[in-house]
Image 1 (spheres, helix red, strand yellow):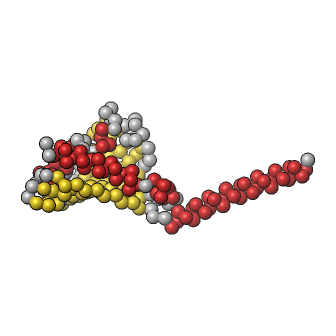
Image 2 (image 1 turned 45 degrees about the vertical axis):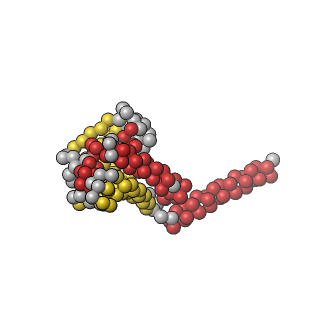
Length: 187
């Protein structure tokens, strides 16, 4: 009976040591993994650059092409500040965990060329990330639009980055949004 208790104790110790070793190994690996990610997509739109830029700089217009805006028709939206200018904020509040709660603020505008945003997610995971949209004339009636997103995953959460494939997850939504924008602006 004593031998059986000793064997069970030794087995439990080995299991705990193995689990502890796995945790320590994972934390060590996370030290060397990237903590930042960036995703960018682009599309050509058959409209002059000024027309495209003057459309995408307004947060309210972004609801017509962003895929996240259509995921929850019951989502509550708020707007503060002067839309299309630095400091304007669009907020969202959704019960849908794929949408969550957060806000997007225009942080910088290079008129006719680029808009920078700060995205503050509150639910389901709290984080602050950054996005931008840029426009570049291909010809007088054609514009290249780039939409980029970058963020950070703090240590040790960055251990999830290789498994999440942000390029694929976010890239699809950005491309779908750009495809929607093309349809809206080329009507």
